[in-house]
Length: 392
Ligand code: AMP
Image (cartoon, rainbow, N blue to C red):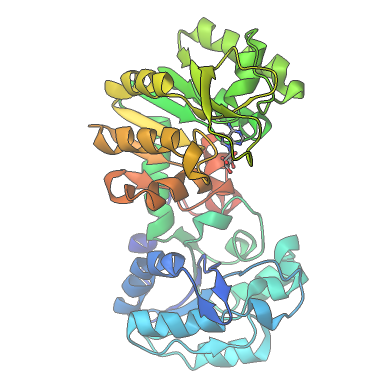
């Protein structure tokens, strides 16, 4: 387990906190502040403990250049409102201006440094830049799970120069996601979907060693159905992944893991076709049709496979849920998860978005805040932004 902010004495200290303030901003207005809201528990705790809080983050992809479009200034304004105290914006994250702003901080005050990605050295994890950034603090707190899979100066490099611990957000991710991977309650079921098999092979392989059952839906299911000899028509199928899909099917058999593939699919001639969708057997889809959602029989079959689960991890939608005509499979699976008496964890961007959009977020045990980061976590990889933190 990693040390957290609770394990260090922060009173009166300059604490450099890496947050994920990568929020969408349109015409200078933040359109979704949930990432800022999620960072509040750590920031509030540090302020209450009398720390001098130096916040930093990236936003967007300014490619190492100063670009006002990607300024964090709107975040500083929103943070000030949410915290009920001023959070001054500092026009650079390093250099004299940053040092002056930090020196002016009193215990219980915070400031926000400008976008770390305005400097090309950030993404290169340049040691001199990391050292300069680190010189603003006496302790480093990483609370940006969404960028923890990146070895950048502000996510990992600074930890070479400062005692480093996690904030509450990362701690939560480690407890929930790490907990289920290390010591899940059985039966442990993984449900995987989404578009590309190639993106998820490592996740499939890592989870296969740990789960009792695996459900595969979404676009990636068709590669498995084809590998098993089925006819999938025009459905998304990654030919280059057929051998590995076959290997996974065989490995599941060898390990005694029940691997469930869709038995029927909601199909159309293309995603954009305005014709009425039709349901076909998932392994016998007509040549001019593609599977765009799991069908009604599959939903029932998956529901039964989940019924006795004590732990469920889910990544990737069951269909093209962005289109209401193909959202039914994903919605029914979110509903099943919400009603299970089990630890339920959603790792990843699209499935997290689906659960939130469909109104079930508060009935899921944990919804990971990181897309790429949670995938890498589920792959069993060491994330640089977490590996660099001190162990308890
Ligand atoms: P991922 O990022 O791999 O989790 O993939 C998410 C995307 O997969 C979403 O945008 C879905 O629209 C897409 N998707 C899910 N099922 C299908 C399908 N049967 N055919 C094509 N795309 C799909």
